[in-house]
Image (cartoon, rainbow, N blue to C red):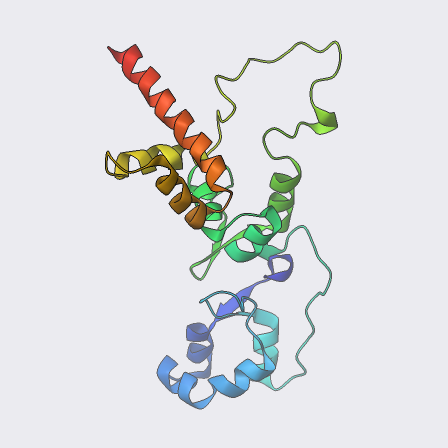
Length: 207
């Protein structure tokens, strides 16, 4: 997590500030630096550090503490986002690709989402209308064609059907999707059934 979207720096830029090649800095200085200034993304392959903390270390000043409380502008990794939403990291990336989440923001190659956006997606997921649904007397909106309409998982299921061999059992495809993207195999079986029916309807309409 990057607290409150604070400026960050990576090891290549730190080495450049010190005036040595990155391999030299990593061999000579990185171990002590990492002990004093921990990476903000310990669950990620990207080593990013708070800019103010790194600058203080390089200048020999006391290293300032980071904000400890949660803030809406915190930037979360895909793993942190997945944990809050109760899904897998692969599903987080799929949601971002299909518009269920924004593409996020990038810091030195690491893709991140604000805590504000993740909480909003968690608390206002499709199908969770505020107040428990339509109020009495309100006109009913357009009826969905099916329960999974606008669900980004439907596109994943449809592509899985295209990629699978014709004789592959639906249950096996569903199990593989569950392992990759989270949720239960039974949910993915329903999504696969809906995707197949939707494609069949589209084929008929095009003839």
